[in-house]
Length: 256
Ligand code: 13P
Image (tube, rainbow, N blue to C red; front, side, top):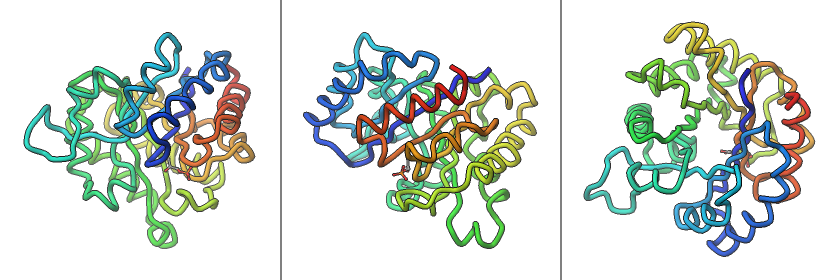
């Protein structure tokens, strides 16, 4: 039985004080939903304040990215050795970091291995562009991203890996994939590639989220799909009521 996981990716939103106040408000409202793993990913700057605000709760904190080296002359970067004092999860390979910050399949793979080596749980984001989608290349492209991200990752470490399928055309656009489309890619491409690489047992245990314009009014459509184990949420994770509703719907649909 895969435990559903809902993660809020706050992107470059909320100051430190706003993030902390938000976390304090969110914590008691999310407390009842213990059958769903709940994660918030603030900016680097706000991680410490949010982690303190959530101490003693079972809401996890994640980072939105990291470098793969432990330390070094990498101006502006944050390392896994630094993050592991504060967070459980780290998003790797988000399409915005691929698009704006030079992230490649190769750097994604280095970061995934570095995260795992430090005991961090990577949420690996994959997803196709609108053009690739329209050309019918989604399954092959996304499958390739998964293969590249997991190169050299052991079957044992796969227990700590979460994958997020986020079609680029659905991010922040209000235009989400349908539940059925997302379920097909997640099951037929992503989980199938994992099965090919690691066998069925590992593939059945890995949690795979959908992301891209997830809102309270479409959440049930995604959560009712057998292959979708949760959501990676941008916009709707910035509002307490919406985020709580998403978790509530996940708990209901997944019977937790
Ligand atoms: P939106 O939910 O705002 O579309 O963002 C999705 C996303 O990129 C989460 O990582």
